[in-house]
Image 1 (spheres, rainbow, N blue to C red):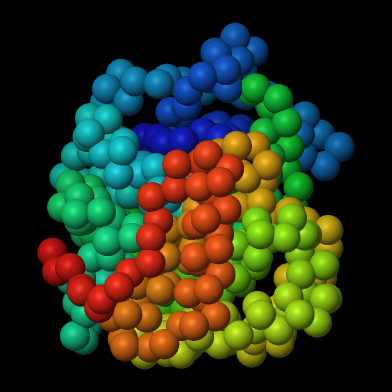
Image 2 (tube, rainbow, N blue to C red; image 1 turned 60 degrees about the vertical axis):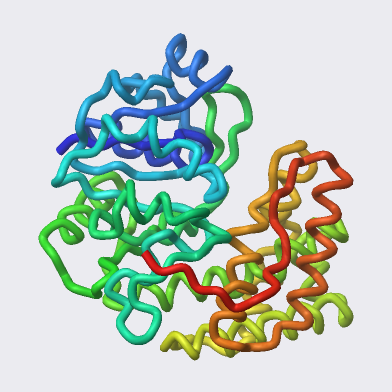
Length: 338
C-alpha cells in the first residue's frame, strides 16, 4: 500500500516516522528548510526517551511520486485549496484521501442526508473546489488528538497522544477504513473506526471554536482560559451556540459542556495552535475553526452573538498582526450546493 503524507510538518512528520518505522511504503511532501533537513539527515522523532530516525522519500514535487493508495492531508485547513492542482498526480480513481485536519472537512455534507446533503461551505472550501476536484467519495474522516512540534528542521518532538479516530462519511465499516485502522495499529498508533465520525469532529471543534480565538486575543494558555471566570463563561457561551447548531445537523455530544471545558483545563499550560501561529507570524486557522461554525449557524438560522463578537475581534487581531486574514463575517444564510 502506497501512502503519501501531504504536509509533513509536526503531525505529518510524526505519522511519517511511525509508518516508516513499521515498514510502510510512505512518502512525504514538505518544503523549505524542513524538507532540506529531511533529505540530508532523515526525519527524527523524539518520543519519550527514544530517538527514531527514518529516511523516507520526501519531495516538494508530488508529481515525482505518482498515484497513491492513500493520501493523508496534514496541512492547515485553509491551505488545502491552494494545493489542489499539485495534489492531482497523487490521485487515481481508487485513491482514498484522509483529512487529518482541524475543523469541518470539505466532504462534511457527503452522505449526510437531509436538507443539506451535497452542500459545500464557502468558509472552508471557497467555490467548492475541494468538493469538485478532490471529490468527497474519496474521503475518510480523521480527527487528530496527538500534540507534536517541529523543534528544529527535520526534528519532531512528540508531546502526547497517539489517537487518530477515523470513519467513512457514510458510517459504513468498509474494507478501506478497516485496512487503514490496521495500518495505524501496526505503526504503534490508535485509529478506532467510528460509525458517527461527525460527532467526534464536533467534539474536538467544540473546544477549538472558542479556546483558540480567545487564546489568540488574550495570549493565555488553556488552564488560564478555563479557570478565569470571565473567559470560562465566554467559552461556555460560544460552545452552547455551537452545540445548538450541531444538534440541528443531528450531532450527539457524548459529554456536556462543563466536562468538555474541564478536560481542556486539565491539559494545563498549553498554548493553542492559533496562539502558536500568531506568535510565529503564521496565518491562523480562523476559517475552519470559527468562521465555519458561524456559516453553519447562518444555514440553520441560529443566532451566534458570542461567536460573532469573538470572530470579529480575532479577524481584526490577525489583520493588525499582518497575517493576511481573509476571513469575514457571513452576512446572509446562503448555502452553496455542489
